[in-house]
Length: 274
Image (spheres, rainbow, N blue to C red):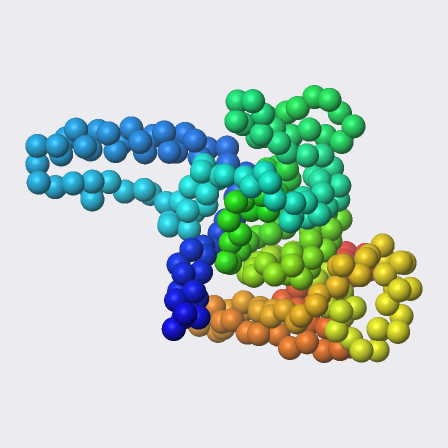
């Protein structure tokens, strides 16, 4: 009974964080959105104050996950005493955004490039910095999410940065973060596949040190546990089907949709050059 009570307690206080696509645009406009919705709510209350109806006539015009994301950003409460995720934050600063994001005296996030003194408000920073800012908030949050859902994870990232982000995903998985990520990037998928091959192919373990050194990787980049990989496909009727991909110790995961696209481009190039 005690175990069940504790489990229920922990479950009730766990929460999911959804990082939607178009994060840059949402971050640029969320304050205006909440301000306008507050104005609408005040108007509705004034109209309805002498009636029996209530705020139910008020609509958010957003899906609940996107609203929850904006709410998380707006009410972000950093855990300044925790050192638990400093390694992840440092990895992002050094390998991805090449600088740091901090909260200034006006309680606004600003970006400072490595080696530079000037601080830029986020709306003047690159879309890559804006796309990655929410994950920094997640890592600095006072409460660790029970589930992190990260949509179109590669948005605004150069292929080289996508490969670095794949390394961060592996490290976060190994630290106990439960994540669901989606991508349309063959670069991201190929990098994750390479990390899985290194992590789980028995024939490569003897050459780990050599491969890691030549590839510029570290042992911390290797997955400790198997991940689940799914491919979304359309059938002849146009319905979306979800198919789990099997891992092969020689080739890893076979991303047929990406391979078909690459083959099509290759044949097109041959046709042009012939």
